[in-house]
Each structure stands twice: as C-alpha cells, then as structure tokens.
Amino acid sequence: MEWIITANPSGKHGYKVLEAFEDLQYVDWHMSRPQKNIREGDIVYIYVGKPYSKIMLMTKCVKDNISKSEESLDELKYYNDFNSFEHKDGSIFFRLKELARMDDERLNIATLNKKEYVKGNIQGSFKSDNNTELFKYIEQCFSVETIEKEYEDLTNEISDAGKKYTDVIVKARIGQGAYRDALIEKYDCKCMLCGIKMKSVLMASHIKEFAVSTKAESTDVNNGLVLCANHDKLFDQHLISFDSSGDIIISSQITDEQYDDLGISELSHIEVDAAVEPYMRYHRKQLK
Ligand SMILES: [Zn+2]
Image (cartoon, rainbow, N blue to C red; front, side):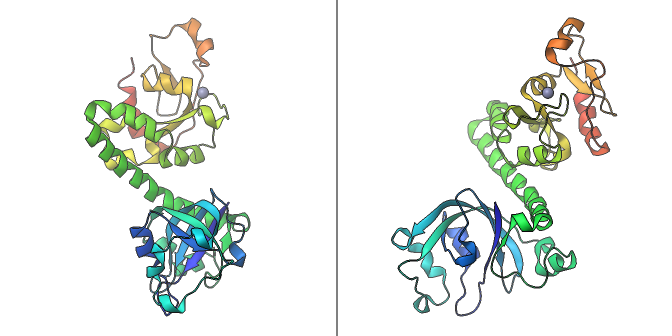
C-alpha cells in the first residue's frame, strides 16, 4: 500500500520535516486515526505544507506499532515549539526511512489541482487504493529521482572498489534497484523475448553497458531491457541482438539445433519504441 501524509513546517505546531529526515536515519511518526493502517513495508510520501506546498519526500515504513517508550527522542527538537507538544502515553508511532526527496514543481499543489489528481488542499492522508492515477503520477516523478540516486551510489561504490569490479557491482545493484523496478513496470513484468511472467527470473540490463555509458544514458529507461535469466545472458554475451524493428539477430556461434533449447527462433521479436534504437545500434555492432 502507498500513502500520502502531510507535515507542516511552519507555525507554532510546525515540524521541520525536511531537516529531520536529512539529519536522522529514520523518523518516528505519530500515528493519527486516518493513518492507523500504515504498515511495515508501505511507501509513504510526505506532502510538505507552506512555504513549500509540495510532495517532497518518498519514505518507507520500516516498523509499525511503535509505543511511546520506544520512540526516539532525538527528533523532538524538530518541533517549532517543543514545549507545547506532548505525546500521550497510549500514542502509537510508525518508523519512516527516507528513500528519496525532490523539490519539483510537478508535485506542487497547484499542478496536482490543475491535473485534477487532487481537489483543493492535501489534508489528512491519502491511500493508493482509491487514488490510483495520483499515485501512478507520483511514482513516475520519483522514479527518475531514485534512479539518479542509485546511479550516484553505484559510481561511488565502483570508485571505492576499483574499475575491474564494475560489471559485478552493476549487475548486483541494478538487479535489485529502482532502475530494474522502472523497467519491469514499463515492460509489464515479463521477458520481452519469450514472455515469461515470473518476476524472480527477470533481469534488467543496460543495452549499452554501464561502464561506457554517460550518466544520462545509464539512468535512461530506454537503455534497458527486461529479459529472463537465459535471454539476458545471451544478450549480455552479445550472442543475440535486435534490429531497429525489434527482430532478433542471432550470432553464428549459436547453431540451429540450439535454437529450440534456448527458446529462440529466427522469428523472435521484441516490442521496442524508437528511443531504444540508438542504444541497440551500439549493441548490434558487438554481435559475436
Ligand atoms: Zn525469456
């Protein structure tokens, strides 16, 4: 489940939510009535009120049902008026960890009103099962942000480990991160070649390798394919590629007799749009 909750940084009862998440590893959030179903694993977006009036934080609930005695004290200093603030003994909290933040006009209240995703102000909490379009839109805005963050983390990790580990690190990180999620979403959670719908065997790979791609290329979903483990390996090893219309090109290193076993044929085809072609052109040149 996904949620939007609100935080007001200004005024007497304000809470400096951006600073809190910046400084702390996680924030324990007081659970009000409409939020009582937020559970561990849920994605929680935070709408930050004036002067921002935007959805700015993407967080994940990492623990629910926290009692007052377990609540972290660190974060209380982020209330504008700490003294006026007191949580009752029976209060329940949920723990949020920041995944991404953005300050983007696409997510301000005026834009959300104009696009008719939200009527009037955001108050209380919204949940995804009755606001499908709104949450789809927010996810799109944030996926760009999370993929970029993933890219930064990845390049840092590579520079620490040394260039020769690039392929291993990229495979491992891309294999479980935001880029894979975005691709799987884009291509309907199935192998683009054989159509197998089994998320656990699907791999997301760059068409033009990470090591030779620019940042813009590495974070572009058009530079990625979703294939099952077998087909991913064939593509990765340059034993298959695709022409500009998505028809398969098979390396002469694969014999006709192996086609069946590998689940490919001369007629195999993937559906791709034109934006994929510049990357595919690069890949084709390396066919073995
Ligand atoms: Zn496949």
